[in-house]
Picture 1 (cartoon, one colour):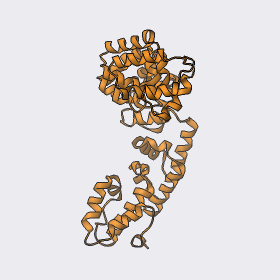
Picture 2 (cartoon, rainbow, N blue to C red):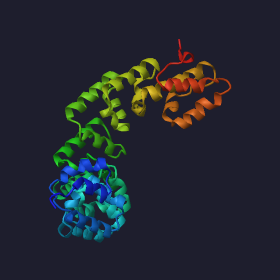
Picture 3 (cartoon, helix red, strand yellow):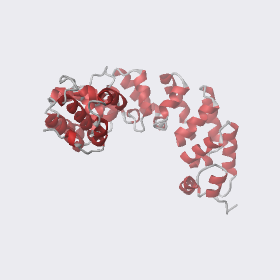
Picture 4 (cartoon, rainbow, N blue to C red):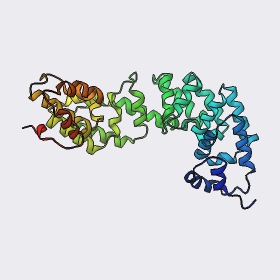
Amino acid sequence: SPSFAVEEYLVSTCGLTPAQARKASPKLSHLKSPSKPDAVLAFLSGLGLSGADVAAVVAKDPKFLCASVEKTLAPVVAGLTGLGFSHSDMARLASLTGVTFRCKSIIAGLRYCLPLFGSSENLLQALAPAGGSVLGSDLERVVKPNVSFLLECGLGACDIAKLYAYTLSPLSISTERIRTAVACVDGLGVPRGSPMFRHALQVVAFVSEEKITAKVEGFKKKFRWSDAEVGIAVSKAPSLLVRSEDLLQSKSDFLISEVGLEPAYIAHRPIMLTYSLEGRLRPRYYVVRFLKENGLLDHDRDYYAAVVISEKVFVEKFICPHKDAAPHLAEDYATACRGEVPARFSFT
């Protein structure tokens, strides 16, 4: 019927919320009857998808309702069955991958990468954060050459499998670009055998060489690092390459000027630079300094040891043991974590 109400159908039959239906309906405005969507829903029901599963699939990819059961969905399901996927696996895969599920190329992509993961469960868990975006890339022209090159570079199957978890993955870029990225990571001094090589590659692959060069110069200026120290820091914490310049500067000012740490000390412990200045670095410094100045903590206790532990462990080790000697410490620490400086933490 020309009066087929798509939005109403999405809510009443597919289980979408009114907001989801409003967002999805423009993509289905060409539908004049429910015949094709009904066929798709019947097919999904036959696979054992619950109402919630169906709603998730349709919300992710409204045009799924327009797919041909005979020409598109049935062949994909047959291929997945051949790869050992259960119907519940297929339900998860459909809701994760959206439009990619409707492409017959998904079978070849899964057949290729499944051995990297060892099981469909491991694969589905890895794909969850990124929605299986790599599966939408050209397998023969892009993914396979990139995987082969990365294997040559010394990455293991486990490392390569983890690259499937990114929405923007090095596996999906041109081989020329990935070669440039690997050369850049090499130039930064990150060893190919390091567990951080994969992380550095993920960062560098999507940042221009000019920005990387500028970032390196920024590190040398802000932290007074040598080229070798930049390499050490980036090898341990590749995410520094995409951290805010202003935040890095404020952490440099604090750690070097106020805490009194040496540049080399920071370079070997760069994870500190990934922590919040106001929510972690500064408040914990105040606590450690307060305890030392009041004779409650050995003066040779390392600041880094207090920063790197979890919040729960920090409170257990540095706050709770001093409830009697410093009854206001917990309150002062909480105040400092809110960005304020309690009077007892005003050191001269």
